[in-house]
Amino acid sequence: MSITRRIAVKVGSNVLTRADGTLDITRMSALVDQLAAMRHQGIEVVLITSGAVASGRSELHLPQEAIDRMSSVEQRQLYSAVGQAKLMSRYVELFRDHGLHVGQVLTMKENFAPGEQYDNQRQCMTAMLSHGVLPIVNENDTVCVTELMFTDNDELSGLVALMLECDTLIILSNIDGIYTGLPSDPASRLIARIAPADDISPCIQASKSEHGRGGMQSKHATARRVQMAGTRVLIANGKRDEVLTRLLADPAGIPHTEFVPYCQ
Image 1 (cartoon, rainbow, N blue to C red):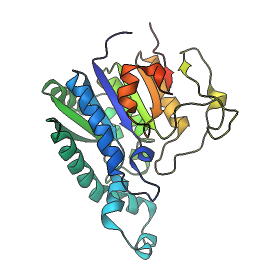
Image 2: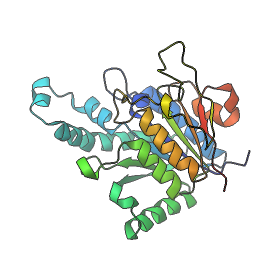
Image 3: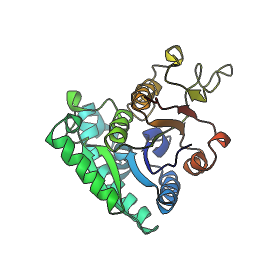
Image 4: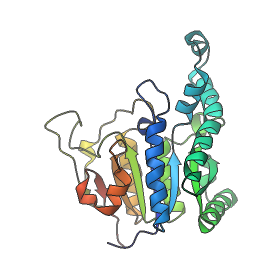
């Protein structure tokens, strides 16, 4: 296997969120410890994070009658506006404990169309990486609504991984990867390796995640796109202890699905 020099890690809402929809600080701290260890090993890391809405919900504790008076778009904008600041503040504190600097990149779908905005965004994140700053990327949820939105942060993570020519994209969900059927079905088995020519579309479930906008259908679409561009993709369970450390040290020792990159 080639030496990994740059990794994009996407952390989904269901990894960072408790059952009540609020932010899981303990899980967040554990993931930061692992990301910091990767940086100290000389690996450049880009973090694509969900959690702004959960962070805002944790902060505001709005009464139900106030929530009922808002549309779903207004709720998302309000929680994100409050939560994004809290989320980044928490990341700054956690990474500072490891002697690392982070920088925030709030983006929109239009920034990934070819042109000046794309070039500026890539230049910004490349400069951050070259100066030892870990980019933390999220969608600008206070502005992005309807047609301006990414499908979810899975799509965003794939675009970032390709933009920065990452060796590997790791997508952390709340299940171990892609199964032959419903993960809850005892008869289903985890698909460990997916080659570019493999057709697993009959196995992909259309259901969405509980706290996020994505689902395995979105992860599969993103992984395929990135795989065909020549980048390896790993889908794993972000709630497993030391998941990132174990994926890098001994992938065979932890359940996951690998999309083997297409080689031209």
